[in-house]
Image (cartoon, rainbow, N blue to C red):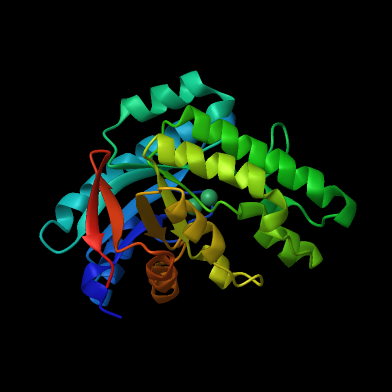
Length: 271
Ligand SMILES: [Zn+2]
Ligand SMILES: [Zn+2]
């Protein structure tokens, strides 16, 4: 794989509660791998912004990423980003956060249903509850896409990896076609990107998120932009699974991938 055109647009530093490496070290690793760009997109769980001190970690992340950006100027494009989770649970706060910093890229995601824990923290799932959880989750993604204050929609099948890892349950996304189409059509209408998240390849489920059929459906519906992100929480996971993601994007009909600078999309050919 030609690393010169690798832009990893979903990366966590140690300013994410589950991140392990500082921005500077992530940059050093990215340079040694020959990457062209990384976007640091530390967590901001909007529904826990004050209770879990995201107000402090978001600020710290922004400042440290700015330092890394200037230290690696000319060697690596460092993009200022944020992973804004559940922003539509408190739109006013989400808009305040986004407008308080000069981001290049804002990732929109859902990690937990309202007043529930992140799927990651759930110890097991009952097969009988999966259908209602998937429906509720997809309804929240519709709410997120309707709000639309982000640039790319992250890991569309997020809970699926935990259904499988915790309880061995698999989900056929075709059973939720109508809701998935609603999400994708909102992204098309609002000219938002769909993220191909490779983090799921490092999970027991071992799948891209979303999988090929959803990427293809997005293209067929008129989707213009895709971003690729590793969701790395360790430096060694930077750009992992990108060959598979690019292959899926190309097979779906995308000729370019997108990165964002100052929240504007720029396309580069997929190699
Ligand atoms: Zn996420
Ligand atoms: Zn993430």
